[in-house]
Image 1 (cartoon, rainbow, N blue to C red):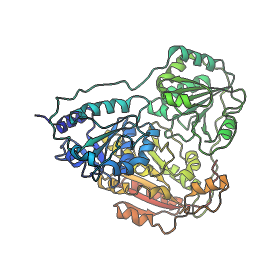
Image 2: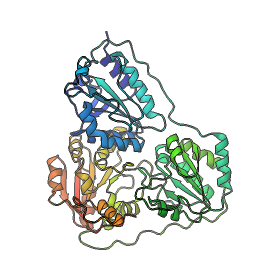
Image 3: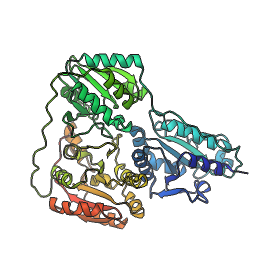
Image 4: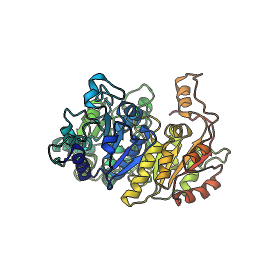
Amino acid sequence: MATVRDTTYDLLRALGLTTVFGNPGSTEQPFLTGFPADFRYVLALQEASAVAMADGYAQATGRPAHVNLHTAPGTGNGMGNLVTAWHNRTPLIVTAGQQSREMLLLEPRLASPRATELPEPYVKWSHEPVRAQDIPAALMRAYATAVQPPAGPVFLSLPLDDWQQPADGPAAVRGVSTRVAPDPERLGRFAAILAGSRNPVLVFGAAVDRSGAWPEAVALAERVRAPVWSAPASERAGFPEDHPLFQGVLPYAIGPLAERLRGHDVVLVVGAPVFRYYPHVPGEHLPPGARLLHVTDDPAEAARAPVGESLIGDAGLTLAALAELVPPADRTPPPPRPGPDEPADERPLTPDALFAALARVRPVDCVLVQESPSNLAALRRRLPTTRPASYFTMASGGLGYGLPAAVGVALAERDTGRHRPVIAVIGDGSFHYSVQAVWTAAQLRLPLLVVVPANQQYAILKSFAAFKQTPGVPGLDLPGLDLVAVARGYGATAYPVGSAEQLAEAVPAALAGDGPTVLAVPVSTAVPPLL
């Protein structure tokens, strides 16, 4: 007779979930025992890295991923990056072991007494099956929940003594829709408002990229001849940043953002929240006389928008429909934004000079994963995203995501056969949050290049302290860290790089390697302004 374990593996196989990211614990071993030969276990040395690797893999493949955590402690370890997966809208099936049902009343060691509450509110659904036989159906429901818009992580707590129980029968494999079409009447109203606009502006966010809708975004922008901005703090790029209509990235504060939109009478926001703010800078959410139209596939995102009218719909379907409904505009398009100036020739390099040097040697088809928050403005200016699905970062604001996510992205590039080179730009503060991910990249022989702008400080926090006038905050400097030695200890090729010329030699060699390379680049310790 087939067991619950047999039936669950059959279902995972049917759903294409044959890669499992995790760090095994005693409560997971009955599930993992006799691991099938057609499955692959990607070992992370800590659960936070496992979650972020699965996130990067899911985003880069465009399919959900499975991550297996170790009961309550492992779920706790992974929570920071589970928060990021929630904000990134990444479809993750998170399973965690649970103690034996026969002992749960006693709350023994490694029991999770309120397991379904632990990951809340950062999962779409959290469940511990009442019967062992319910595990396959619960997994199918979890999958269906994770992939439907807005996509996101789900959580299953699975007792360790369930797996050898007899199954009820084969699991039902079901398909579900992953896109929502906009309401035709409201869509027509949006099109009419946009067509009648005197001076519209377009703001595109990550959901445009998730929907594979760059062509539709370009078609609408060129049809209405409107300037295009990236939504603030976006985790993916929604528009080609070398296009003449692209103007840059909006600031992530209320007053400055509204000021940037001054003079426009209609603001169309597609695939982003309205808006993702960080420091509180008081002001009106929109400039005088402006009207905001918001397209999102997330009802909660629509409900919490402070201004404007919302339309629920997939970004790609809505953009394509608007391009059909809105007549071509005869207005003069905005002038292209000026390019950046020549960077200063200083030692150590400024972040701006580092990214300018990297821009000269990075392959045109490379994927960039970044987590260097204090240097983000310079990075976005010097390293524009010109191809879809080639820029990834964290939407949550929490550190420790970028490095393991880059490992997941690099693995996805190999598995999909695209073999695009992957470059991660990770600040030295961020690097040490999830440095264990370097070991996984080395074990998998992934040709991942990690460029670390090393300023030996949490510069983003110093920027925030200067902005909020909070001097004397402790713990913002990071002396005595030898990240080259640490990276080598985890199996990477690693060495310091001190000039643009050295970087130009190091990058091609790293990308042609058969394992990860970490380049530690000392950069200026000047603290950039927060906005």
